[in-house]
Structure formats: C-alpha cells, structure tokens
Amino acid sequence: MGARPLLNRSLAGMGTTIFAEMSALAAATGSINLGQGFPDTDGPEEVREAAVRALREGRGNQYPPGPGVPELRLAIAEHQYRFYGLTVDPDTEVLVTAGATEAIAAALLALLEPGDEVIAFEPFYDSYAACIAMAGAVRVPLTLRAPAFRPDLDELRSLITPRTRLLLINTPHNPTGTVLTPEELAAIAELACEHDLLVVTDEVYEHLVFTGAHHPLAALPGMRERTVAISSAGKTFSFTGWKVGWVTGAPELVAAVRTAKQYLTYVSAGPFQYAVAEALRLPDAYYADFRADLRRKRDLLTEGLAEAGFRVFEPQGTYFVTTDITPLGEKDGVEFCRALPGRCGVVAIPNAVFYDRTELGLSQVRFAFCKRESVLREAVERLRRL
Ligand SMILES: *Cc1c(COP(=O)(O)O)cnc(C)c1O
Image 1 (cartoon, rainbow, N blue to C red):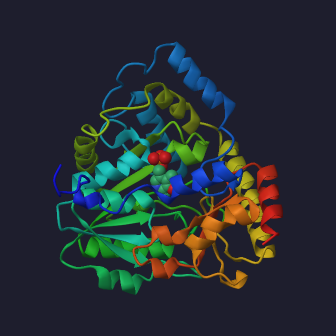
Image 2 (image 1 turned 60 degrees about the vertical axis):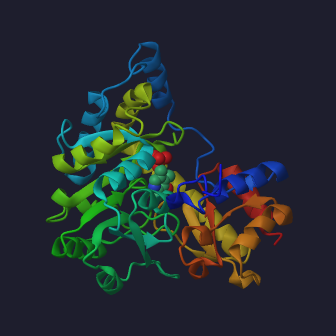
C-alpha cells in the first residue's frame, strides 16, 4: 500500500478512544465502571413497551420519512413549547437524527467550509474535535478553568476573528457540569449577533440540571435565525442505545443540516422514534423525579469522593462530576485512571483527553453517577481505600 497513511489525515491521532481502553480495563479487573456515561438501568417501562408495540404493529420497520416520523416531529415541537415557550414548525423546523452525535456531525459538515474557525468550550465532548476536523475546519478552544469552570466572556470576544464561523455551545456541559446562566447566554448571544456567527447548541442534558435552570440560546433575541439546537432521548429517558436525536432551528438551517444528514444515515431507529414521541409527552412528574433521583446520586458520589480525599467540583447539571487528584498526592490523571482499577476496583476517565492543551486538565478525573445507588455506595466504599 506504499507509504501513504491509510487513515484520512483529519482523523490522524484519533485512534481508539479512552472509553474503549477503560471499559476493557473495567471488564478485565471486575471494576465498577464510572467511566463511560450510560445508565445501568433502562428508562420507563411504558416507553419500552411503546417501542415493542411500534415494532409489532409494523410502524417504523421500513425506512421512516427522511426528516423523522411526523408523530415524533410533532412531539419535539410540543416539547420545545412546553418547556421553553418556543414555537417550532414540526414540518420545516425539526429534523430527527441518529442521536445527537449524528446531529452534531451533520450540522458541522453542512455549515462549515475548510479553514473556518469554530469556538468551543474546552474540555470538549469527544466527537466535536473529530467532526470539526472532518469538516476541514479549525477548532479554537475557550477553556473553562477550574475551580468554577465558567466561560470568560472577554476571552471569548478576543478569540473571534474574521475566520470565525460558528460557536459550538454545550450547556449543561460535559464533563464539568457547568450550566450557563441567563447572563452568560445573553453575552454569548450578543457576540454571535454582533459578529454574525452561526451557533450550534448541544443540549442533551437539558433535563439534568440541579442548580439553576436550562435556557435554550435559541430563545434569545436575534438567535432564532442563527442557531441549530441539538438534543436527544438518550440521556433524558435513559435509552442511550436507541440513538434518537433531533435538531430544531429555522427552516434554512434545518434544510442545510438535513442535506448532510441524508447522506450519513439517511434515516434510523424507526420504531424507537414512535416510542420517543410518547416519552416526550410523559407528565412533568417523570422529569422532576428523574432529576431528583440523579441529584441524590450526585450527592452520594460527590460526598464519597470528598471523603476519599478528592477535590470535588460540584456539577450544576449532567451526570458527571469532575474531581482533582492533587490532594491525593497525584498529578497525572491518565496514570491515575490506568492504576485505579488495580488499586481499588473503580474505573474513571482522565479529563486530559477532553483538552487540546492536556496540561490544563492533567490532574482532573471524571466520574459518572448515572448508576444504581447500591453500585455508587460500593464504589464509594472502594474509593475509601485510596
Ligand atoms: C452523550 C452525549 C452526546 C451524544 O448523544 P447521543 O444522542 O447518544 O448521540 C452528545 N453530546 C454530549 C455532550 C453528550 O454527553
């Protein structure tokens, strides 16, 4: 095959993710896996049953419509109105995708030209770097710095250049748990309007906010026509394997994203789309109970981590907590996470993998708390051995 590398250069260095390495380590050592963020119990029984019913009744077993089944698009539009007072047209302003992951990929591939600059919060969710690179664009990190992990809005202003095309905003933020305040959102919106930037928002943790509230950027003045909002059912309903996500936004933006999306998967998850339509219509009590349950789990794990000697940065949202291992006499999170299963039978993820400038997150380690209470209690017990 000659000397030319097989892998496209935009993906060079993006081999197997740390999640694969750590999950393999968890399996090999019988450790409790607080690394990858997936719940260890399924979502509501009635939603599972809705999927079974759709499958049996032959709804969605063949290619669903490209933009998503009408029932789900309507349910998404109703959800946007119910929780945020946003009116979106289910026919022209909603697109169903293969999880938020495909929505992010399709949005970036559709909206970016090679050389465009994209500003995103560092530490980054891992697919952002890959998708920006596949679009030939350049990522420009705005670092959320410990201990508060707030965006520095003066720094954001200073990062904007004539080549800046898009802001990629993740709130609630994985892995730090930062939830942007109305003031921060207003400042970001103002900069986007002033510099005529597009905005892609990753809101997959919209229903997992413990402090404050989630506010969509698209609701702010001047933002509707420039914002592609992304969410998904995986985190909200604890069905991460179904991969049902969606995009909402102005018709031109949704049409652009759909153009890229149709050549990625075309369509996906037919029967699950009907089930997610029912899930979105669950009563307020479902959303409130889910949040309260995760908040209890957050408190259980954060208290346990603090007692075990970690510095804990309490998350305002998501189901992750970022810690610092310096008080344990440790410096390197990657080494620490590789050794942790052997030392006490727990797996975590080093935040360094979410940074371009790894030195900025070297001593940070992320734990997921979307696990059964008994599992979290056992993990806390084990971590005390450190
Ligand atoms: C989990 C996650 C996603 C991916 O969502 P899917 O619907 O599973 O594709 C996207 N963004 C963030 C920040 C996530 O944590």
